[in-house]
Picture 1: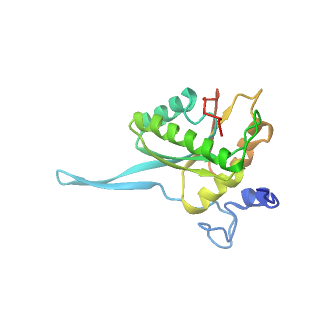
Picture 2: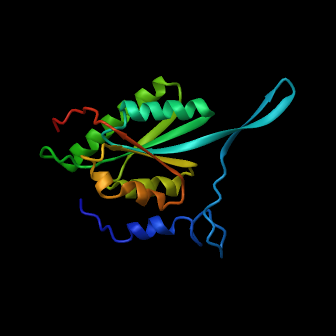
Picture 3: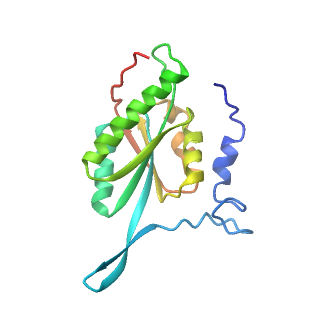
Length: 190
């Protein structure tokens, strides 16, 4: 499938600009995305617990130790939820089909969800567009988050870092955490 990449950079730069969902018209203020909260009542005491929402964009590193460690660290700070988007990026080391790339992404997502749920965190996710910036944009258009975690391979082998993905994702106006890790195996018999 061929996609026209025209406008991706404009979308990233326009996030948080006037007439963008969540923005106050006539201002350049970023969207006012409220933190999620859970109301509670305990022994006559009422309150609101703030729950931070993290969007994770990862592919080969989605179930890797470095990302798992970062999620564990964030979960220890306070209540939070995670949402993973795994772009259906085509592999470079063997012949592939679009269906095969999506199947590999689904397999990675399932493994990542399983590993994070073992930590006891609330997590969900989806397979996204083959282009990570599109995948992030599509999720942000549907759901609000407080922060984005971009998990890449190490700099010497990462296509995402060569494409400056971390800085491009910063264009959406949310704080970004960058985690580097090693690739996790996935069957590539597709």
